[in-house]
Length: 122
Image (cartoon, rainbow, N blue to C red):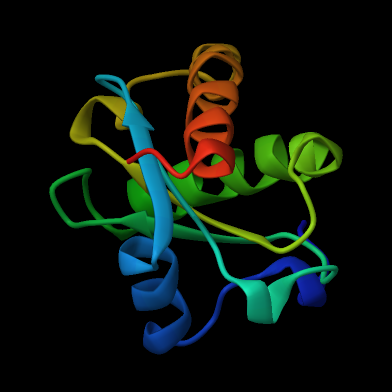
C-alpha cells in the first residue's frame, strides 16, 4: 500500500497532474501514465493516483486492478523524482493482465514519461 503522503486524493490534485504546466504521458495497451511537476511541489515526496474506469470491468475487477497497480507502484516509488505527481490510468486490457505483465508495462512506460516530464516535453 502507498503511504498517505504519496497518494493523490482530490480531483484538483488529479487535474493538476494531468494538465500541469510541465506534464507528459506515455502509454501502452494496458496502462497510460501521466506525470506532472510544479515548482510548488519541489522537494516534496512523489505522489501517485490511479484511474480505473468501468470500461475495465465491474467493481471487483476494478478494485483488483487498482490493488495490483498500487502494490507495483509502491515498489517503484524510489525511481520517481521528488515533487512528481503520477496518474496511472488502466485500459480495459489491464483487467486480463497478471501482475507480472502490469509490472513489465510499468517498467517500460515509467522511464519514458519521467524523461519527458524532466525535459519539459509532452
